[in-house]
Structure formats: structure tokens, C-alpha cells
Image (cartoon, rainbow, N blue to C red; front, side):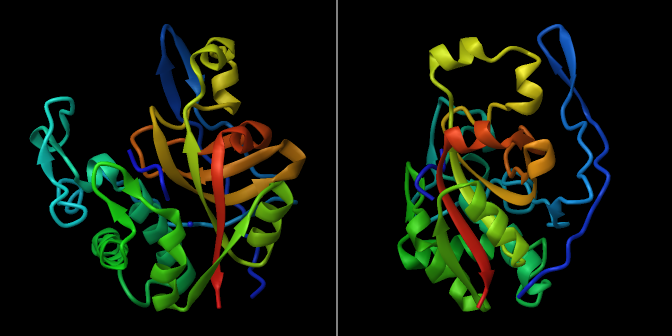
Length: 239
């Protein structure tokens, strides 16, 4: 769940440590890429929607209901763990862009979640409406701008912004065309709809770098593949 949901900065480079991921009978390097000298990359804090203390808390008033189809939080839907990818992604952007001036890692997800709820951007059983992102972040000296392509992502990042994106799952036929090797550069973002942050871009390697609030912990993606499954791109930046 979660579908419905986003000053010139210094370029920060980091060597990313590869992580082994078991897929079927094959072991893949989940993120073996090192940003090049021309990459724009920011050290955005990573938060997970299922983490404590907020993971099993209710996201939105009256949204937490028993659901036999999920094992999360003792079989309850309507929690941050199940449908809080939107506020978790926005919380990461706010923390980074404001230097933790208004909140810290332990309070950010629920603070942003409550802002979406009070603004009307939380829809029980559905997720987060992306159109309310500007209302939420404007309280913290930030603004949003809708973008649509690789040039927009690069421009946002080069100006010190962070990109919020909603992504969807490939179709069944598309899944069959994604080999194990493909999934290293072409990850499966979500079983349904999901929000992630784009914190860097490396055109020379055709990659975007990702903070994923979900359990998959995806760290990078081929740019073309990412754009194919992205349904919205929102630049979050200082006023």
C-alpha cells in the first residue's frame, strides 16, 4: 500500500558497500556501484517505515483495523509498517533539508504522518495522497515542484533538493523479462504502490541512488527502468 503519494548544494560522494542478496539460488550484489566524480549524491538519513517506535503505530485516525491477510503488527492494517512509505519518505527529505531543526529520527515519521492526516492526505486503506506534500513540507521552510524526467531529477538534485517518487510493480509479462542479472540494475520496487526518495544521480553510469523506506532496501536503479515504473516525481527543496 501507499500509492497515491514528494540553494545550490555541495556534491557529496560516498563509496557504497555492496550487500549480498539471495534471489532464488543466485547471490547478487544488491548495490555494487560507486558514484563517479560527476555524480550528484547526498547523505540522506535512511528511515524504515516498519522500524520502532513508529512501525506498528496507527497511521491516520481510524485506519488501524484487523486484517488477516497481513502478518505485520500482529495482523493489523493501517499502520506505518503497512502503509507509511509516504510519510517515511517525506520525513527523510525534511530531516536532511532542514538539518533536523524541527524533528529527529525518532519523531520524524509520526510527525509527518500526523501532518498528512490533518491536511487530508491520508486515505485509510489506500495510503498517502502525493498532492498534499507541499502543504506538509511548507511548514518546515520547504516547497515542492512536480518534475517529469531525468533532466528534472538532475536539476532538482543539483540545486540541493531531494526527489520523492511513487513507483509501481511491473506487469506479469514484464516480470518474466527481468532476469536475475537484470534485477541488479533493474530492481522490483514494490508488490503494489510505494514511495521512495531519489538522493543522487550518476548519468555516466545511468543510475539513480535511492533511499527505500520498505523492506527491500533498494539502493540504486537503472535510470530508464526507474522512470518506467515511476508514476510521480516531486522535487522537495528549500524555499
